[in-house]
Length: 182
Image (tube, rainbow, N blue to C red; front, side, top):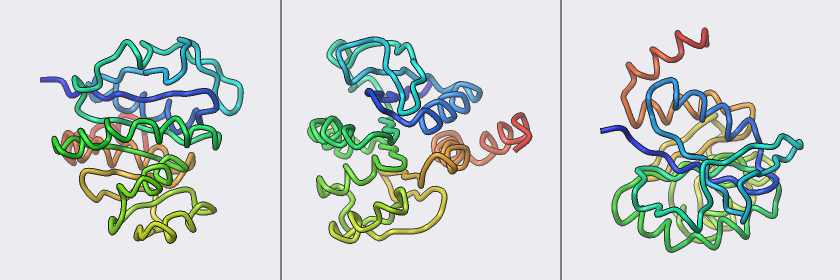
């Protein structure tokens, strides 16, 4: 069975945090669907890269996915991510993974989902973790199930490889690292 990842995109997303992992995931055979949180199939990144998504959120049943993936980006994403709390709760109840990188983990922290968890976010946003009792670790990626968090765009490869290791095992991560000359 192929694992399915719902990668959620909205206007202002950070392209490195979304597209580097998408590439890595597809290389190892994971199914990644780019899902627009906006009412448009074309989503523009923080640096004006236009991406055609696979589907719109309102036309998607996220229950069919094994992992949610939230890239960081413009601060307006926070309100969009916050509206998905019931979906996060359902994923947590079903022991499904939620991956978030850069600013996105702070949205989860504000909802109380990361309380007493180990996690990482964009370093300048660390105070949000402190305010919400999240244990900050200054590393490229942190796993504290069901969450996998990443530091920022510069950690996109490490974050993606950590996710591959968690979902498919260390050998799969090592194979794709060799393929990428990482």
